[in-house]
Length: 193
View 1 (tube, helix red, strand yellow):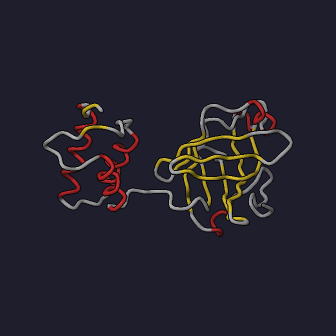
View 2: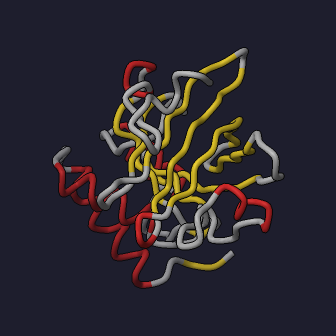
């Protein structure tokens, strides 16, 4: 176990001061998100002058309204034009997804399959002619696919596009939201899953 770095210690101090004042505004949520995404180690020893552990701070942050991904179901979008899109729907006790990721020169990746969650990580397994299983990390309401893209995943992509590293933020968490996602020709992405 190590002690908090000065950087992490400063983030914790700022967040605690805001939380104790009962501030629940956008800036407070931004500090919470910064603390969670800053790379501060999870197994830190909390200094003797502080009673809270990092897990308690994370739990308190969620209670103050820090965004969290409560369900996989919904519409996900990335930045850019055209924007990456993913829909997730519940099917037969599990979850299915449809995905379009854009690359350079309007090349794209697209496919569908099964998605599963284990804590703060996801696994996407394409259902198609080439084996392709991607992993991703959840931070807040955002899924970031791993930079590592198995060779079989290239089958689902044009020459200047790749699935690895795509970032998708949940924009809605209902079936109706998921059905708003569109495929490459403008048809509903999840209508046939």
